[in-house]
Structures are given as structure tokens and as C-alpha cells.
Length: 445
Image 1 (cartoon, rainbow, N blue to C red):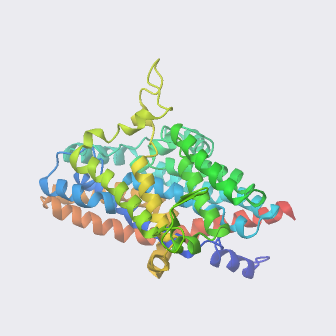
Image 2 (cartoon, one colour; image 1 turned 30 degrees about the vertical axis):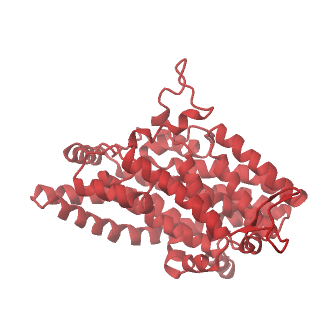
Image 3 (cartoon, rainbow, N blue to C red; image 1 turned 120 degrees about the horizontal axis):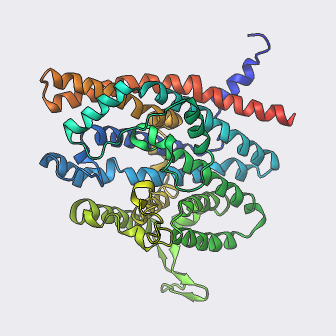
């Protein structure tokens, strides 16, 4: 306890680095935590209920559940897009509130440590727990249940490959999915950390010029940037859209203007009402139209033409399949999807406009989960594979019915994941935050 500044420690534990973050964004992240857990568990134990699943021919009841509920409640591709959009929407908030060199410098340095330390420990847990016996259990489970959607984790051969995997997660700038760190992670979704981290530098480059440019120019060039990034099939179009929404909320009075409605005009061409004022389209109509349109597109792929689900990426400039290039594109890449983008845009137009939606997301339960989102993301799939699958296999060997074994596995996964995530948050995530900020204070003092 010698030399420990308890007040400083308490400050970093109680107040997160993004202390200027609007709380409804944390609540939205908490909502994503619930969806991510549902997706992870159902893909593992009931894959026919999962959106865009390879197991399209499962039990009829599961197929109905997939077509009705999966798009709304456990949508894998919505989760990818929402996390990247929300990250970009949140990162710039402290700098926009206080646009000084110290704020940007602190953000650049602390973010890498706050992500790298928990991820390194998570992969160490993976290396220690995914043993040969564990892999055999997972493989037996996969083939006995005929689960085509369940990925088999890659086993690190030695400590050097583990360290290289951690390094690559914070170094790779494209092809995020095709790296050993993500392949070793159960569900093979750790590439999301890589994508969020790399895209944060796009946010930094944009936000430092915001205080020195005209709002109109930022909107116009931001839209051009989004179109160019979409054409290049880069996650940057989600990222730039998130930054643009943040800029409009904090510098352009988005909520006040949106509540008045969207005027129907282009330069000098104005559609006016009888009293001479410009006619305005209600914002709820525009946001609702985008939201419903995006969801209808996703329901189309889920229920009517699932064979067309992967066709959209072919119109981008990125996927070349001639000359041996990108022949494994669908296996090694996760594309940013148009339908998900439209859905997220509709959600945030409504969310940034109406207080009632913000208050709903600011309830204590969602805020609690949102502040622990990283811990749940890193741990929940590990316990599902190491504990949940073993429980399921043990029950099935004792002739327990399949549905009963799945229910017991669900209860077990929740019972193990919740306290483990809380411990991970308090023992790893919060101290890494404390360490990163104190390291910054040390090198700048």
C-alpha cells in the first residue's frame, strides 16, 4: 500500500476514460451485449435459429424462429456493424468537448493499452484452456450435432505464436478475420477488436480537423467519404458515418433541428406550404423508413432468398477473384453490409432525436452491461465452448433429451459467465484503464 494514491485510483475506477460519453450510448452497447450472448449461444447449440446460418435445414420450429426473430434479436452482421459504428460515434466525444492536444494525445496512447492488455490475457486463457482434450470434445460435439456453423478453434502451437497473434491483432490493417488470433478465439470473432482499433485511427484523423472547418463542408465531404469507402468495401463508411453523427450532435444542434423536421429544399428550390414556410418531413418518418427498409431487406435474405445473402459484396471494387486473388473472400473476410448500414442509420436518427428513446437506454441494467461489454465479449464464448459444451455432452451421454441439455447448458453458461465477466472487468479491464492513464501521466510529466 506504500505510495498508492487511493484518490487517484478511485478516480480512474469510477470515471471511465470516455467520461463525456452520452449515457444512452453506453446503454445501447449494453443492448448489444445481450444480443451478442444470444447469437453466440444459439449458434453453438441451436444453429438453425441463427440469421444467415449454414444450418438452414434444422428442426422446423428452429427454422421458424430464425425467420421471425433472428434478424431483430441475435443478428451477427448487425452486431459487427453496430459495434464499429458505435465505437466511432463515441471515441471523438472527449476531444469535441475539449479540443486540445493533450486530449487527443491521451486518447491515442491509452486506447491501445486498454484494449491490448485485456485481449492478451483473454488469448492467454484461450491458449491454456483450448487443449487437445478440449478440442476433441468440441469436434465430437460439432459432428454429433451436425452443426455446420460451429467453428473449430485453432490451437496455438507454442508461446511465440501466441505473442505473434496478439501483436497482429493490433497491427493488421486489412483482412481482419484471417489471422491466428481470431481463428483461435471461440466463435472466431476476435477480429472485431482489430477492426475497431484500426478504424479508430480514421476517427482520430477526422476529428482533429473538425474544429477548423465549416460544418457544411464536413457534412458534404463526409458523405463523399462514405460513398468512396462503400465502393472500396471498407469498414470506414460505418466509421465516418459514426463520426459525422457525433459531430452533428455536438456541433450542429442535430436534436433541435431534427425535432423541427427536415425541410424539402435544394439550394434555392423550396417546396413551401400555403403560409410560405418550407414544408418539412418529420424526422421519425425518415428514420423509421430507413429502419423498416433495412429490416425488410434482412428479412428477405432470412425468409425468402437466403441464396442471395452473399451477392451484395460482388458489386464493390475490393473483391477480385481473378489471378488467384481473394478466392477465399467469403471465408477470410466479413463485409460491411448495406442492409445493416441502413438499419443502423435509421436507429441512430431516431435515437439522437427523441429523448424517450435515450431514457429507455439509460436504465441501470443496460448501463451496467454496457460498461462491461468488453469483458462479456472476451469471455462468454470461451465458457460456452469449455463449460457449456462439456455440460451438454455429459447430459446427452446420460440420455437427457436434447432440448433439456441445451437449457441446462444455457443456465450454466449464464451462471459462469456473469461472475467471471465481473471479475475480469474489475481485475483486468479497470486496472488496465488505470495503468494506461497513469502511464500517460508519467511520460508527459
